[in-house]
Every structure is written in C-alpha cells, then in structure tokens.
Length: 331
Image: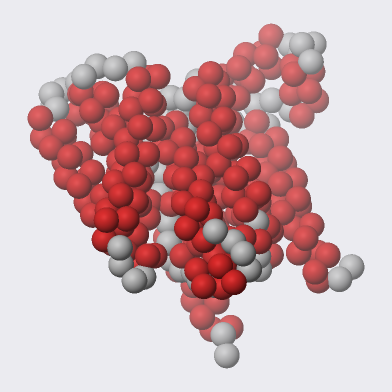
C-alpha cells in the first residue's frame, strides 16, 4: 500500500480506534458493559443491569466524544486558516465568552438548558465582537487584526467572568460557577448532548466541505482570488463553523483546554497538512483524547477530577513532547 493511500485511510483508522476506545471505556469501571451486552441493550434485548449502565454512561460518553471532536476540528480549522500550529479554538475568545455566559446564567439561577444556551450565546458573541473589531480596523494584515481583536474579546470576557466570581454568593453560586469552569462531562444528559451535537455536526460539515479551499486560503488572499475564490466570505464561513463547534463543546462540558491544540498536532504527524485529511483525523484523535481524559477523571478515587484540569495535565506535556520531536526532525 502506498504512503498516500495509507494517509487517506488514516482518518478512518483513527475513527475505528475511537470506537474501540468507547467499547473499552464501557467494559471497565463499576458499571462495566461487555460488547455483547451493549449490542443486546441497544436492540432492546439486554439485561436490566446492562440497560441501566448504558443509560447512565451513554450521555457522558457522547458528551466526551462530541467535545473532543468539536474542539479538535475547530482547532485544526483555525490552524490551517491562520497558518499557525499554535492557534487554539479559543483564538477569538470563544471559550472565555462561553464561560461568561454560563457564569451569568448560574448567577441568576438558570437551569441546565439555560446555562448551555447562555454559554453558546456568549461564545458566539465573543467571536462576533472579535470579527466586528477586525472589520472596523481595516488593517493590511486581516489575520493579524483578527488575532489581536480575539485577544481583546477574550480579555473582556475574562474580566466579566472575574466580576461574576466576585459578586457570586460564596456558599452556593460560587462553587457551581467554579465547577462549571473547570470542565466536566458528568453533568450532560442525553438530550443536552444530542442538542449540542447538531451545531457540532453542522460546523464540521462546513469545514469538510471547504476542504481544499482552506488550503488555498492558508496561502493568502491573493492566491485565493487568483483561483477565483471569494477569500473574505470563505474565511468568514470557516471562522463561523469553527466558532460554532467550539461554543457547542464549551456549552456541554465547560472549559476544557488543550484538546483543540494537541489533537491537530498529533493528527498532522499522521496525515500531513491537507485540510481534507487533517480535519477528520484531528476530530477522531480529539474524541479518543477526550475519552482518555474522561476515564482518567474517575480512576484515582471516589472524587472526580475535573476534565479541564486533567486536559491541561495530560495535554501540556504531550504537546511539549510533540513539539520537541517535530523540531528535532526538521533539517
């Protein structure tokens, strides 16, 4: 099999690996479900214990898969678009904006759907602020202006979040806000995960449809226009899709960092730079990474470790290792 053929099949192979990881997670732990019992439960012929275990664990698994895939896909899209492997899904302040929206909802006593809706709106609002600021600037380098405006939007959202923490009631509201910001897959219900799956799938579909157009956009606007592509509109569409995926992930799981930065790097070493291969491979890699983090969060005792903390603890050293290895291999 040729190297090009192998790279083309790599995203599918990683997807199979994600499925194996799901089965491994279900087959371990206090509510273990064997693959045979899982299949029986899915068709309505399983035991009561298997159906109960599936009902309790399926929402969490779906939330982890969706969050990992969404953050990794958005990170890969941003990295291609901005020609910068250090770009993360929070480039436009989306995670901070979503965190502010969720914190405000918790402050006013909203339910879980209200918190998710507010987080989603907050993330989109931060991205809209960054895009509006970059549009008003009319800088020569549009990408640099967008990055700087994204930093401003993220800083403003972080300031608002700090104010919410200050005014929150310390015995009820503050713990809820803090726990949500640390990130977790535990609180997601099946309905919430399925609802958030819609914008994630929509954003991923748009990025995959853009495909080679993202590769052309990464070369610069002049190159895109020379090939007859509307650079500005395509860039805006790609940013909107990646922002949609990031907001949906943060709305379900809270702030879980590093997945959107690490997974595209790992996938890039396997499939290369082409968007049509990198984005699906990154999404599959991110899903596996999120499953690993979710499994580790309950592996050290009865108290669950927040997914955001584990993502940083696992992602930062792994990213450093990938960076060092990649740097040594360059001529």
